[in-house]
Image 1: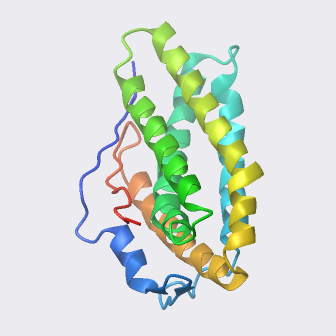
Image 2: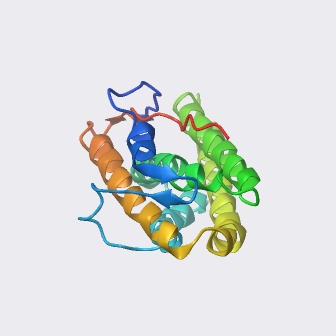
Image 3: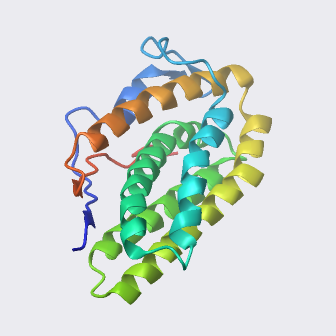
Length: 205
């Protein structure tokens, strides 16, 4: 029996992006009163930490010897982690990156790759047979693997060079707060019918 990973873009009463924007005080500064309970960590370190479980699951999803039943279980967890990570990243780090000329293109590239991955999650639901399902799951894993490698090798290093450390720590706190909220929303859903009621960043440069 096929499991469906549902992905919707319904607006919430309070957009996480608006909540984040409310804390921004200038192009190079943040004022956060709701992030003090979260560890003060550089956003680049937070992203690296969040990539680790995704990398572990990617290995399983790419393995041709892994049974479909096992991949289904791991795909559920992968989709939850991936989509929460993507939305939190778009609505905190990518928003900040758009304030820096050297980082703008990278932020839009990241958003495009996130959209491709989310679209593929939806297509996996509609796969009519095992062969197509397995193929698309593997492609999804490979796309995310490439995105992670590019981010770790290039994007995060550029962020460290261009965004002041103090701002990176504040972005890190906001990211942790938002991703915690997104994961709570996702995991509260029935395990066989996960919905992602989050919104894309609407920040314009």
